Image (cartoon, rainbow, N blue to C red):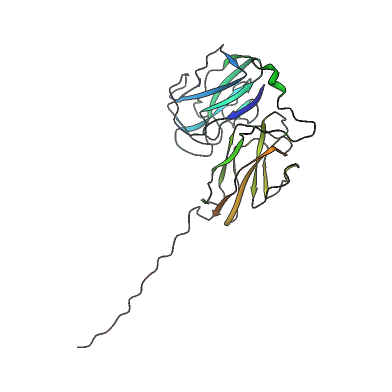
Length: 289
């Protein structure tokens, strides 16, 4: 079972040459072969040939994003890929990720999905390979366990941030907000795993008490299914947005992991308002001779 996921550089890009028997596009867990032995913590590189990588929600032709299937059969190919510890979404366009696996045997498979996390037709999937994980640092396993009832610890270098929008952006009333995360993993609410949690979006609200569950209302939006993006509704006008990461019980970690506040302006078009042009009126004069 997967214990922890840490995303690395979030860069949408066209990946390298890969191998699988799809029609034109091909995907592979880059560099890994069936039967390989891995350490408990390893960086997987996702390869792709014949298509482009784009963040979830971006409806670009011939593109999509990676999903890693761990210890689970190939998901249904005509519906949205689940989002849980066996189905990891890389909706920010990641082409690599550092993961931690428990010692023993595991299966890994890549499934490429479209803007809505649905596999393409024909599907673009890698081989389902078996790997063996060797425990090389057994004494460190209980390192992150918190005191009973206490706040879950976060790594010192953990960071949460907005991929979209940026500070000062003009956005539409129904934008897709994309969440970025470094050095921690995303897990649904209710899953108490070390170094994981889920996103919360604060809209026009100050930071809540950091030792209590985050409120759940129109100003404190919970994404307990493990979403890394969400379509929200905002009234026209100026708004302040902040991301706050929290554990399985919606309680911020210690130290708390939250983003800077960004200021956005919502307009009907999602574009800056047009400046009114000043028309100069010329006065007509009659001249007599």
